Amino acid sequence: MNMPIKFDTLSYARKLEEAGLPQQQAEAQSLALRDALAESTVTPGDMLLLKTDLIARLEILRSDLQGQIDTLKAQIAELKAHMNIRFNILYMLTGLSLVLHGVTLGVLFKILSRLP
Image 1 (tube, rainbow, N blue to C red):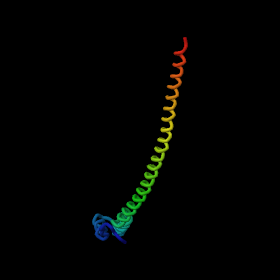
Image 2 (image 1 turned 45 degrees about the vertical axis):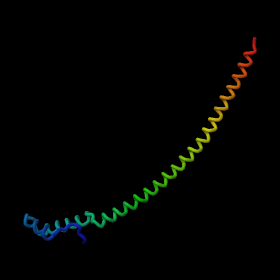
Image 3 (image 1 turned 180 degrees about the horizontal axis):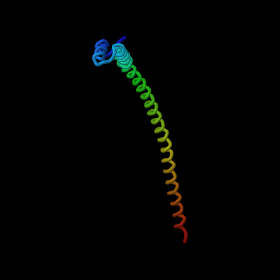
Image 4 (image 1 turned 30 degrees about the vertical axis):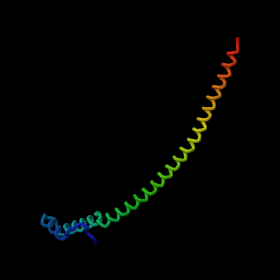
């Protein structure tokens, strides 16, 4: 069994016996503790694998996010171009309307000036 933590079961069992526990109980506790430590501890190799996996997943997420950002930037640029066309048409129509109002007022004043 690979023990990431140095644990001497014999020494531990002897200390339990010296404290008054029966030999059979001391041995059982030392073996149970050994098993618990072996199963619950993460080894440096496990941590390295986890780190490598996490870095790979983060890189995939970063790449996906960058792709989505690029798509949004392209959509925003397209929307800006579309809005510029619409506003240019609106500006021209507003200008034409002002010119027509000016002409109408000019004609109206000319007609009014001829009245007695």
